[in-house]
Structures are given as C-alpha cells and as structure tokens.
Image 1 (cartoon, rainbow, N blue to C red):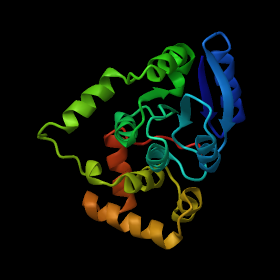
Image 2: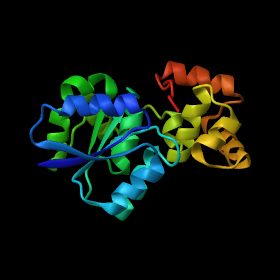
Image 3: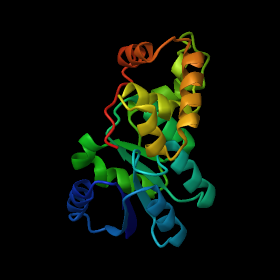
Image 4: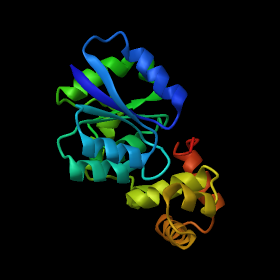
Length: 214
C-alpha cells in the first residue's frame, strides 16, 4: 500500500485528486495539507510514503519548500503536481529534489501511474523535461539570462511577470517589501533589462508567463 499526503490549497482540487485515486487499491490518502506550514508538519509527523505537492501554495512553497523537505527527510519521494507547463519550472523542482513532475491537466490520466512509479524509486518526468535537464549539463550555445537567476529570484520573477505587485509578492512569500524590491533590482540587473515591461515581454517570448493561482 502506498500511503500519500496531498498538499494543495484548493479543496476542490484535493477532493478531485482523491476521487481519481479511489479506483487504485494500492494507494491510500492518509493526510492533507493546505499550505507550506502544514506540509512541513505532515513531513515531521511522518507515517506516509509519498508527498503529492502543489508547486504554488500560501506560505513557504515551490523550490524552497522542496529543498527544506529534502533536508529534513531526504528519502521522502516528492511528486510535484502543478499548473505550470513550462519545462523551466519542472527542471528547478527536479534539481531541488522532487522525483516527479506532473501537470494538473494530465492528472486525470497519469496520476496513478506517476505515483506508482515515483513510489518505486523511479523518476516521472516528461521527455521535454528530461531533454532540458540533459541540455543544462551540456555546453550551451544559447545562454538565456533567466537561467542565471537563483531559485528565489526566479520565483519573484515569475510572480512579477504574472502581474503581482511587490506588496502582494511580499505577502505571498512571507518576505519584507524591501527584500522583494531588492530581488526585483537584482533580477533586472542579471537579465540586463531596464523595466518590468521588458521582463514581461521576455517571459512571453520564452513561454515563461504562467498564471499563478495564489
């Protein structure tokens, strides 16, 4: 029996996932979490085999949360379930320690097989993500500036180009407004761009513009 914890801040999503898993005799949902703090509480309590984790939740989330979980419980398999389709989000999540990455759009048909595969110790990623991971360790002709951002800077970048204000980002990530402003300044400098409008244009051109549900 594979015991899992579902971490997603939307009740409808959690209920939908549980319905998908009802038909799997070898999978049991033993816990739920609605934000990063509850996820860490579940991880510290233990008693489950796999964490099904939404990449964007209130409180600590995303790559930062994955890293903390892996620091505390290195062997816990993490399967990311997210609405981000772009490979860059998947690559960062896998690098942080997630073992699998699945978009919510494909959950209905792939969730059960993804859980079984990740729980058995094997990765579950798309061919595109696998190629991106391979390309990242090879000498590259195309040196895209967003790849030089730290995980936190990329998270702030994604929220900025998604239309969030500095104040909103500070609240979402539990940071001070000053810290977010500093991140924005560093992002513009690293990307070599003068304004937020340029960042948005870049994000659109490189398919990095994803609506956030936070």
